Structure formats: structure tokens, C-alpha cells
Amino acid sequence: MRAIDLMVFDLDGTLIASGGDLARSVNYTLETLGLEQLREDVVIGYVGDGVRKLIERSIGPDNMDRYETALATFWDYYRQHLLDTTVLYDGVVDVLNYFRDKRKAVITNKMHEFTLTIVKGLGIAHYFDSIIGMNHSPYQKPDPRIMMPLLEEYGVASDRSVVVGDGVNDILLAQNINAVSCVHVNGLGAREKLLSLRPDIIYENIKELCDYFS
Image (cartoon, rainbow, N blue to C red; front, side):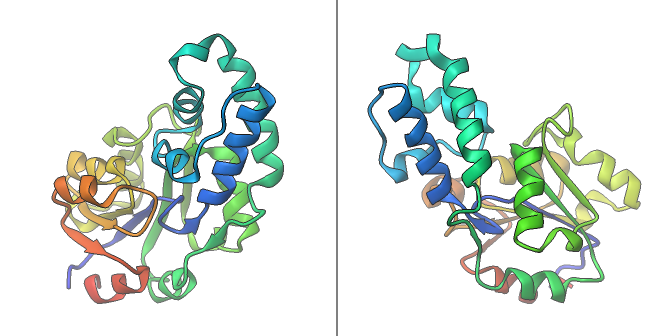
């Protein structure tokens, strides 16, 4: 078991199963603009770099003249529907309780407003010392500067911290700051791509974290 002092969690695909609400919001946006809708797995493949990249990828390069309209449409719809079907993964509360004495944070490329609404709505906000979403910091994953203030504030060495996520940016963030990389291969990220980055720890159910860290 690895001794750690700080646990940094991603949100979508790590703590929450949110693909359905994201895909429906994207497809509502596309339908409103008169564009062809996308399969849910295609939309999920576009997730991970923030809402702006999600919309850019979803409307495609030939429709960038409608980008601002698409972005506003998505925001308005998703803001009202982000908890329609989104739920915590099985075992999340058990794990957060198990590590209740550890410093814990959420760092996500999801908009900060949406992040707070979701973690509060699903009743897990109180487990975290810090919650950092897109536009809450001038940086975003995998830039190590998004995590450095936490290490400084909590007096934690980077090699005694772990980044838990399901995406390429989570693994790269951990590697960029010399933290332990722990990847969920049943989240939203493509398993083969994640494994190719050689994360330190691979898990399929979040409950496995209790066996890896102390």
C-alpha cells in the first residue's frame, strides 16, 4: 500500500456517471442548430478538455461560425438537466468515508458552476477540502500549476499525493507533478489510450482504492 496525504479526484467518469446527461445536452444543442445528432459514445469520446472543446468537437469544423450560439445553447440546457440521470458510481461514498482523514480535492475541466451544482446535488461536497472546476483557476489539467497551490496550502509532497481519474489529462497531470497516477478504466476515457500512458495504478471499481492507499 502507498502512503498518501492528498487525494485529487476527477469528476465525470471518476466519481459520477454523467455521460447520458452530457450526450443529451449536446444532441439538444445540435438539434436546435439543425445539425445531425451524434451517438452517445461519440459525444463521450469528446469529453475531458472542458465544455468549449466538447462543443467545438461536436459541431465540427464546418460549423464554427455557429460556435457561440451552440455554446450558449448547451450551457442553458445542461444547467437545467445536469442531474437528470447523473449519479455517483457505486462505492464512491464508501471510499470517501474510508479516506475521511485524508485531504481530498476535486480538480476537473468541467465548468466550476456545474461542478459545484453536481457535487452539492449528489451530497458529496462536504467530503472535499477544495473543489476546482474550469474558470476557477487560470490553469486546467494537465497543467501542474492547477494542483501546485494545493500541495503548498496543505504542506504535501507531490509524491505523497495521488490523482484519481479516468482520462488522459488526469494521468498527465499526475506525471507532470510527480504524483501517483491512478486511472479508472471503466469511466469515460478509452481504455487502450489510458493504458498506453502507463499509469501507476489501474482500477475498475473505485472501492479498490481502499486496497492501494493508506
